[in-house]
Image (cartoon, rainbow, N blue to C red; front, side):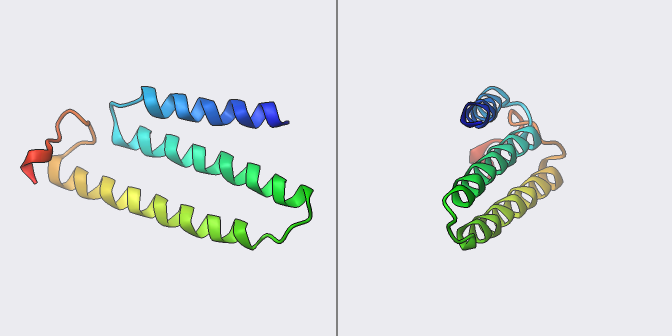
Length: 93
């Protein structure tokens, strides 16, 4: 079971590091990593009969991270017209 979650986590890391063309694909790979970490922490806390308040706090922060990423994506698409990384320039701010 531990090997399966490690494989999923490293697949998410590999997808995040290799997929640098679109911002949406990068955000989806980050959300995949967050969900894998959530499942790992949930199984860890359940196996030792700990309280699940940390899981709820983790979900709150992951939802905030996801909504912040989507708002940045929407503002970049409105400003530039697409989500390609090559069309953005940091100096145009």
